Amino acid sequence: MNRETVVTEALDLLDDVGLESVSTRRLAKRLGVEQPSLYYHFKTKKDLLAAMAEAAMAPHAHTPLPSSEDDWRTWFLDNSRSFRRTLLMRRDGARLHAGSTPTGDLDRIRRKMAFLVTSGVPEREAQMAMLAASRFTIGCVLEEQADADARDPGNLPDDVPALDHEAAFEAGVALILGGLEQHTAAPGAAASA
Image (cartoon, rainbow, N blue to C red; front, top):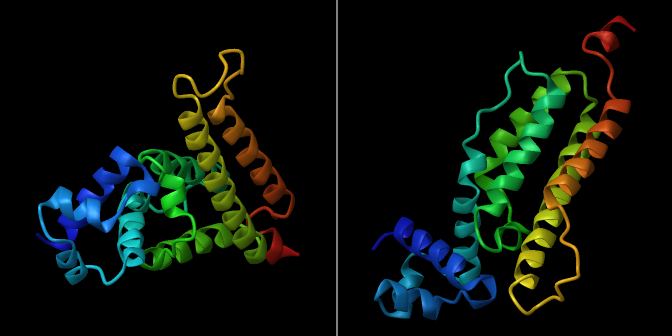
């Protein structure tokens, strides 16, 4: 048993039982080991959850970084969509990710920010837009995953209409992008001013 195996099994456990029911006791039983042996790999449950969050975000973390030829608007939307898709890949993915610190992703975040700034987005606005899009996406996925749980048979009356979560997400991220565009000069405009 190694660290990667523990994280993989912990994520499978998450998908099976949900975040509320993930415990080191259950994970140890699933792995066929004694609970204290997990502490060799993770000192606390919080450490385990952080490793799970990082592993769950791998699909988004491995998407190509923007290149100088990319349109920043298209990239901004695609980046937000990739983040949403990745959060939705795991049961309670947004809850698992919320509050985690992307320590292994800091270089990628810096490169994304540099791309936006080089594309003409003022640095402060780029930072705030990336933060707003991230938090908005997490909130959307939290609601979508909670709604999916609530819609299990017998939890809601049949006459309660289902929300189109994807359309709501697209509308919100478009509004964030629209606000960002209002603060952005065309590339080279700042240099010529």
